[in-house]
Length: 157
Image (tube, rainbow, N blue to C red):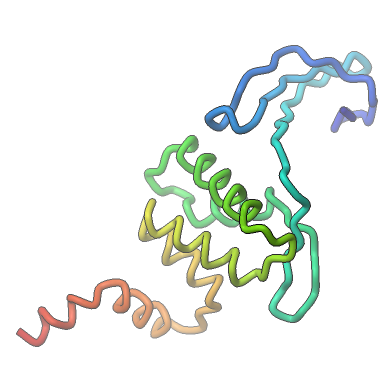
């Protein structure tokens, strides 16, 4: 594994342990050239996934990109980091087990929204605002009112 600090390819593993409910292996590494320490994660990858963007462009599936967008939606929310990692791993496993290597970005977005809706409704609305490209406050209002269809019944009563 190449050292991220000096580029040395001869790094040493100091500690290995299971991570993310035994879905990944966390390795602490040491670079004898510069003395740097860093962590790597190893995961099983069932197949190489390709994301088909809405404009037809194709790009390799990027787990860290998915993780960043989910963590942004969950920023400052009361959700444990382990729960987030489990959710991300579950989403990736679900995508890999779909049987297709080409996955539309819309499918990924819907799966992420479904997962976020079960964990935290605020994060769900945050993610949806970017995913569905909200342009005005009315877009938020309409989306949130769809989350609570019973609130209109209460107003009429």
